[in-house]
Image (cartoon, rainbow, N blue to C red; front, side, top):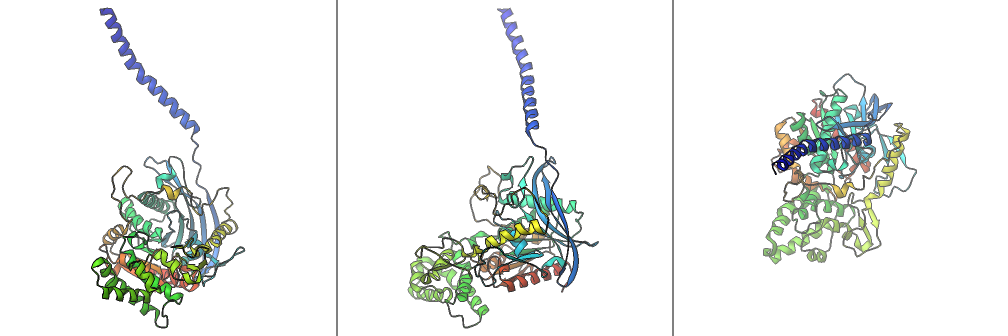
Length: 513
């Protein structure tokens, strides 16, 4: 019996010693197999071309580097290839550099690149007429801001040519926080790669790109110790409560959209537009915040006399019938407004740009079937594809994602907290990030460009958002244009937007006018 016990003890000791060795051997074999199957990450791809042009009366020679910048994890392994279009002027000075992106989330920089700020632009009708089919016309854009700043048009992961690589997975970059961190990492890497750490840095975003810009500014300061010199918001979207009209109990949206509905009704001749436009819009602001908001807060305590006055005023500013306003209980859903305004004519107005109209089949639907303003999308897609190959020499066997990776929207994480942390859902809001950066950097200013006819991110919401959150009024510069979400589609608005942006950048770097 004693011998048997000794045998079992020895067997037990032998197993204890050999089992880890066997496991380690298996792990080593597995690692070797993974290493054998894991493809090495190639060097970043770049397409360089030389160009000349005259911008704001200044003759310039500039280089376009259209290519990848790798961002890496803490171990130094590449995780994503961010593709950007870099317009850099030959200069020995520390020229400003402006990082430009669109929104979505899930949009390439095509819109601001080919319609707003790039040195070439697509021509679409300025009066909101349908642009038709190819061939489209492209022209030089001498009004753009290349005379005062270099420009870097950035495509986030899952858009354009940008993708996850190496140790990265695309889902690692698809979230409110994850996106901001990846864009900040790109900027820091770009500054290092191009020896531009002493250049003034500007951020310029459109729509969700403004959500991103506020968050990126804070990440740059917190994680990379980078102060930005200025931020430009095109169609501001920081606090989503004021731009979410499809949530029935969201009282704020019934207020923030009133001035945009008033501008739209004015444009389409559904209200008395014989007076002064700016005066009418200011009156709609005052009515919305000083009369309608307290009334909606009162709810069923509202007197019949006060209610009747509100119905008349809502009709005056929106052009909708008193019957409809009564039916919706004074709460006009902005997306339904787009269908209701010209329902008697069988057309719906656009959401991205309410100057556009579309003849829809279903004339009794509550809201538009499609956005009439998306008529310009094929022209913009054609312009970037043509421009890349014929002007920039990008002859690459890779699909340019415009629109984005089809999985992006469904997998996007809006929670600002890490996976697994509990979170009480609320409206997306990066305005506190902006407020924090503004307090930390007293020299920082923000320019806000808004279109009067934008039913996606209303201009009154920009005012409502940025006049709160502890943001000083002197830090915000508001500019308004007679266009929609992409106000640069309207040629006078494009010219004004570029002029205002140029003046803003010059003021921020101390050059004045």
